[in-house]
Image (cartoon, rainbow, N blue to C red; front, top):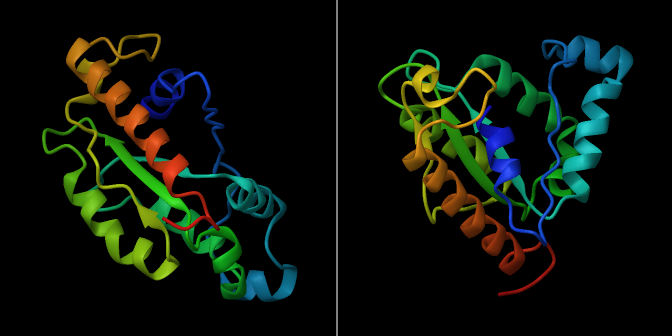
Length: 172
């Protein structure tokens, strides 16, 4: 829901395409060796490689990153020779929502070593960490809390400007 809210908040000259990890199998080196990268993984890898930036929305499970998203990043970084094409120099924004009261601060912090090794350019110009998500979103999945809506809009606008300044292959 948070990612859809972010997509609705992008500036007019910006497009946010939502990709899915729903069809990703559990990472297994033997499977990769036998069958290669699954088609669903390859499709999202190509989508990310073609993008000017990447915005990830994450929940927080047990005070850390969710295993299913870590699994997706493990697949997306395979084979290792693809890391520069897919991730290196890619502007990355990270937002999160969770039903718990701690927000997603610990989850977002747990990702930092992963992003570092992949060589992304993280956006640290703001944060969206939504606590009590069940009370923040209405039944239609829209943000019902005006303060959260404003925070998401502000973040997305700042991230879009960051992406424009830090497109891969550009200096500055």
